[in-house]
Length: 437
Image (cartoon, rainbow, N blue to C red; front, side, top):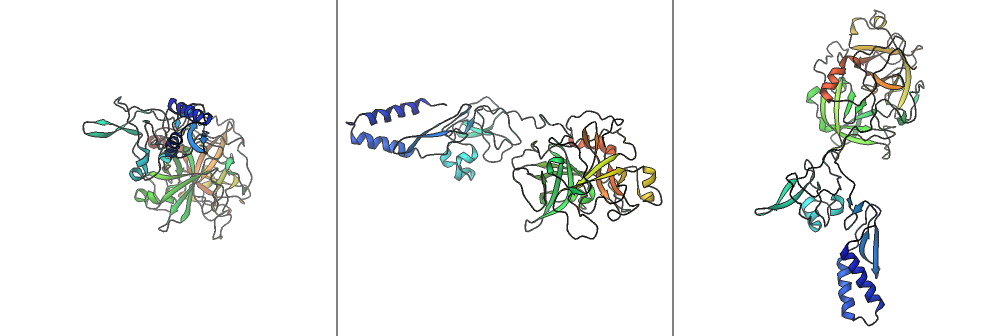
């Protein structure tokens, strides 16, 4: 615990007055006025309020690693996430090397629209971002008063510790057409459209392939590059469409939408049906890894799985054709990969199938993707790691014989994905000869 010198002196003064009955009434009144000015603030980060006279707050006793009048400074914080809105670290120097001036917490609400503790401000000169600037800053002395300067604080490594294709303690488990725990599919994304009255309408599924990127289907956004991305919302860690679990879910706005430049639906077969969404939280940060939020791996371009490989589908779509409502809960099912020759035969889809597509179905045709599953993943396991081998694209009906689900072949877009996202989480190169079904 830490105690500043002036606080120590005040404690000694109070103790001195409490042990001397002859202390003058005027002296006690003076001390009371001093303490009255010290309104009891909230002691943050486990700090303890010390009150020695008439239960009036004197100071906060801070735990190790924290300082400031309200223990609001995290002495161990060494980097920022996103724009650094939540940065509460000790840096008090600008990019030019100038020392920051002390903030004026009393004016924080009128200037920044919130109280000082919420913004991380106080009687200190540490860098903060109370106004949604591009990164933390502070005031320094200028020729004619205070001027704003940005601080040099490194970015936290967004992908530190991330390994794709690993669910929290549960390996890829196939349960035909049944409910699924979100921890079994922590890469599952739910894409919503916000209506004019701010109601959320479920649009499509998706897969988190990097902390800032979601892979989904192009046909989910009929306006393509003209889509109003401000009306889109992505939620990770969601088990049920009509329920919210704040302990598991992470919510993001969409800042970029990249639909494949050769997406074509003129033949109603959605060729190159693939889109990337860049996501960002309110503080500018990307997804944070947890038991319910993790990335799935993107297979290398040369990955080829044998016909009949057992894979898995997951989504919030309709449980059967003809229903007017979606499944409110995340569901999963087992399907097998079909050969390109079979799927493009006349008894299946014929010439509608291109090399950018693949087909999968259950042997008894009872498990399939349906309306509402679009954009979600076709998941295949290799050497214990889960890969998004396909993106739910289209099909004729649901669970119809000789009408399997059609998926975008993700391996054909490996380099396109890399170009748009710059990087993906590290993973081992899969060995297709060692498959886990």
